[in-house]
Length: 609
Image 1: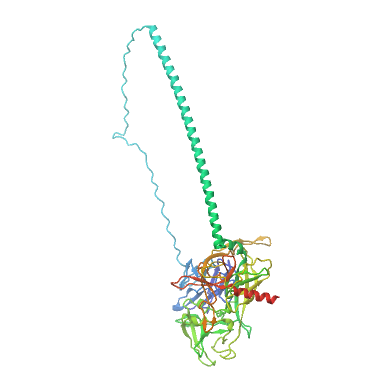
Image 2 (image 1 turned 180 degrees about the horizontal axis):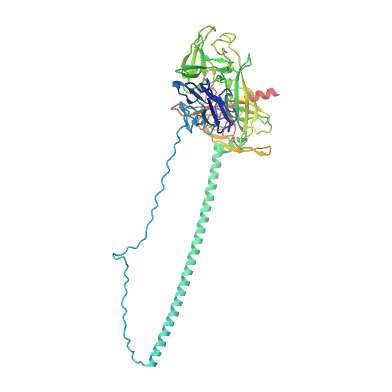
């Protein structure tokens, strides 16, 4: 199908940092539009304000096969998922004009359209729910049933007269006396009846008053007895709690009340650079046409010794290569009133740890391209499709700081040097910030140093008068079964937001929601004390856990890394580091002993002195 040279994709932003903006993207020679926070994305979002959006979040693929123009939406294994018209996207789904795309639940939304609209593309049919018909109102008719003749019959009784009989002529004196006696008897009877009724009424009222008084007294006594019993029970519970507190030590409420303000959120974004040239490093992405569809997969090179490595380059001509770096968040805690903060190395200096991203987010199928290393630019390059899962274990062992090989962007040929000489790489934090509990404002931080022995790092902020936590000074003060508590900011915890607005040039700006961090507390026990590398005479001890504590705390998650682990004395005995949740097994978490954090802090104090 010949695409109208005037055709263009119209994106209307409904929310997010680009709300009310309209983007028009010409369709000519276009096969895919990437969506994400990467500046190279076709639809690019703000890296800090749209933090729900992944760097490579989703993509819109254009297909003009069979003379019919169509569009498909695919989620690139984003952290928060992609929704089409409110429904989660799995695999590739059809994208129609006027559809609404949401980047993560509650994230930025935009509507999709194409202008001028081809004949074969139409908006989805709008489904309306049928309205229930009004119920028929039934009225009852009141009517008097008539007889067969239609008239009521009124029956009138006969009136009969009675002949009056003249009374006899009694004695006048006798009748008068009898009538007077009868009237006196009736009067006396009425007086006696009234007196008796009055006496009975008085007795009833008196009895009722006495009953009510006795009842009120009884109720008052019962209430007083119940109140005394409650006071006695409360006193007994307070005494029992005091005894329990003395036995168990500090509780979680006391820990979060005392040190919640000393626990911070750490936000970071870092990139990797080639030290020789100072240029940023990229993981090459190859685009090939498969069955009339253009596919974009990360590329890997197989060295002569059989080892498979990432195709690293310092060029990004097609603006699709994956930058070596990441953004994320963790936790930390204040260890000096001069602004020193401890956190994990994989939070503040992630380039010194294993780099696990191998291109999963680039495609939902988790595929890649593999080519053989070439020592000549004249050799033909053959791409082979591979499953990333088959090489994941080997590729994830790479630590960026240890360096590697840099290849040309178009050919699997080394740029300078040979396979015996690895290039030196350097990691840099593009931004590193901390936020205290209850604060919307971030404070810039600097990386002081990271431990070479454990997952610990020391930061510094330009603030004084801070409240440091108390560090445990004994290396052997933790035993299996000890109760511990962790403070931090895991991503799975509920968030608190505030709505803000500003007044500029005499106008009130549109309010926006901002997250306010609140620390989460979790409790558990020490399950196992891991062992690092140790030589004891002829015996070498090497534990699979390394020098860590295994804990029963399983209510934490991403974002809690670097948080303080407290004992019942209110002292920090470790840094929370990571959790493991294998299928079919229970979740466990680990902490780095605080001795590694103390070593970083003591080294800094020695340097300052």
